[in-house]
Length: 542
Image 1: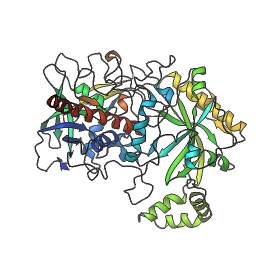
Image 2: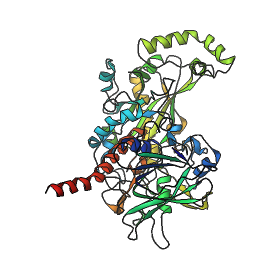
Image 3: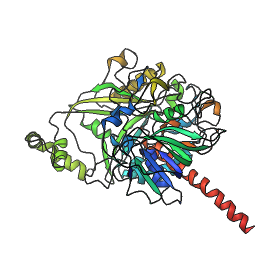
Image 4: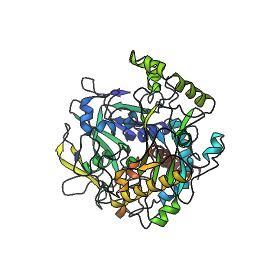
């Protein structure tokens, strides 16, 4: 690994076959898939191996739209491993309906079908530390987990089961650590991959016709600018930075790269997420077991619900999911046990919390080792958490601000918007879940005031680190930025990977989809690089 932080000598980087910008889930996956390919790969990361204030400052934004997370570190990490550093580990695939053109969802429809991604979702398991890569998110979960399906089920024409799987990094000593892509990245990459930290991409370089990428410019911490020539460049810097880099790659009087049709930065989506109902903790044990955590092959799964395609079509709703949110009691013992196991206790409080809750911990051990469920937590409050797809909107977008960072690069100006359809969908999701809880004799779900009053989504529902759509995939350059192979329209060798290429956001956390799409792109890049060699060999044989 080459460290280009201030004070260290500059190792000249002259040329590579493929430059990958960003070391988060997309970039790390691409680098790992291309290891041993015979291609020379440079993986550029703006941050270092630890969090640094000067790198955090490079993530500043100029927000002019809906309120966003005030602490950018909570949603964007400029560090080796990218935003997996603060990722909650939750994985799941999109639904088939997410890929369809839905006439009630503006600009919906992917140029690929869900079934095309199944092989890549399966291959994503090794990158994310999953028990299985596909087939676990619906009622097939019961067969995979070796459990009988519940006798009383939610009505399938309204609500369907959904299961999220949590990643696990087996290389970590603590057994429930989520995959942090930066911690072991160097030893997981082949000798053909050079990882460079402290290198901030500034703009992309193309040939005179602007039809072929030639490399990029990057800055080091000392303020100096350098050039790296590359046969291909893959932007894996996240939904905000991917658009920012393309928009900053322009010449006077000419549009930015990929922006001939004014599409770069548009259709910014995230997920609106927050409590839509409240449930009493006493008497909720059966509900917590049904919509709780499950232990399958040493991996945790969480059960929840999603809107059925039938009700989405009938009532013209967006996609939406719900699960039980837990507010832990101050003396919940499991966090204390985790700190004790890590030899970082808060004494004497942790010992007191453990001693006070021995019956809960005994029950937890039985649940985990015998019933193979998740560890029960001591709760103060239960909520019904909803997470909703957003309506694609061309005016919800990332542009460039007049303000600049220390490298002279314009900050991203973010105009993130929400829409009545999202509030209506979340209202209906909460109402359906509350009604089904009542029908199945689960505890009453008391609707939040904003749901009961049919009010807009509260401004406290901010972005949740899922920026999507700003370099969307489309077969037609007039409607998107990248083609079905994730190559920028009209610019050979320039690719984008990550949720910024998703035309719609679905209801689900995007990380597994990001990794699957990165694997798919790696196959394409490898095949394209090998194609001239195959043609040459055929010509020689001929």
